[in-house]
Length: 368
Image 1 (cartoon, rainbow, N blue to C red):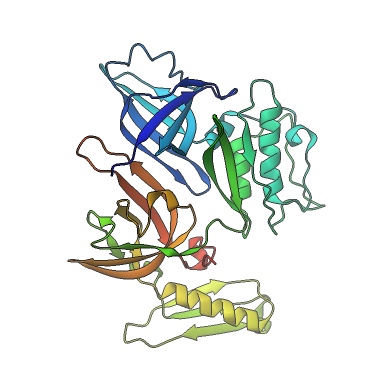
Image 2: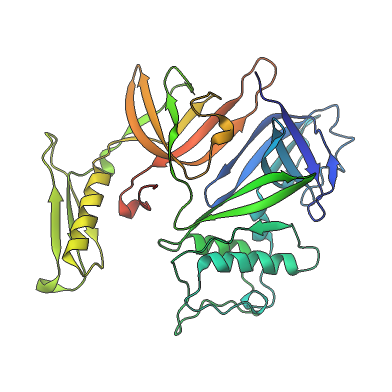
């Protein structure tokens, strides 16, 4: 059975529903990891003129409902007529922070920050933004805590009135701290109000999902593009620990596997040899994964229902294609939904990363 989609317009500050069933077509939307996600669509030409006031760019919220459950929400930023059509573009609620600045410094006295949890700084950013007149989006931020720290006694993390900082950039900085956090957005009905929430994961979102599988002949469609790129491949890793000269620990980990020998160098600040050896082994295992899959087109299926998808989760993918054999675990870092229309079926394009990545590729390790 085809899913039932509904597109809803609401006021940003009050949540008041402006329209319960927007006549949108050519819809594409989806979330992303540590980003707001996006939506694009076209308003039916029949309604483009009469609804232009409702779709007030910068002052309207677009909600997407699938089978009576909210699956996406964000702010409308652009509505530009093209002939008789009215294409619209929206982005998740965190996009709003990129249009706001810290005008008083230290987020209204919440800083400066010394050995502070970046999760707490993100909560303070939202609290400051929503405390200002006409700035309350009613966004709720999770109470997750991380082990990461921002700011020191000698160098506190601070912002100044004379150099207003962009609030979105502050959130981005918190998300880039090593072993810190990741975030995403969700929306859900609470009675007749749409709750807008920021989900924090420390150090990352998601978990290994043994209950979901994506397999050729079941829920995988299209032509999967499996890339074999040896730029990061290595069977041998040489890792350097803390210190200098002859006192510096050097560990080499490798295996012979019948392939041309390729080596990689890893710089670390590890002081203990045992920890350096374990880190070197993990790096070697990560670099021995050759095939890469960055996108996968799927349909709704009992093996992995669309409503069960979660940002950051690790899932198993098995492909048996004419030009590609693949069996591995990947991490979902986003997806794009095309709801379909008429005879066109709903399609979802997963955006993927390796579950285990080399350290200098920005990987954070395996999802537990």
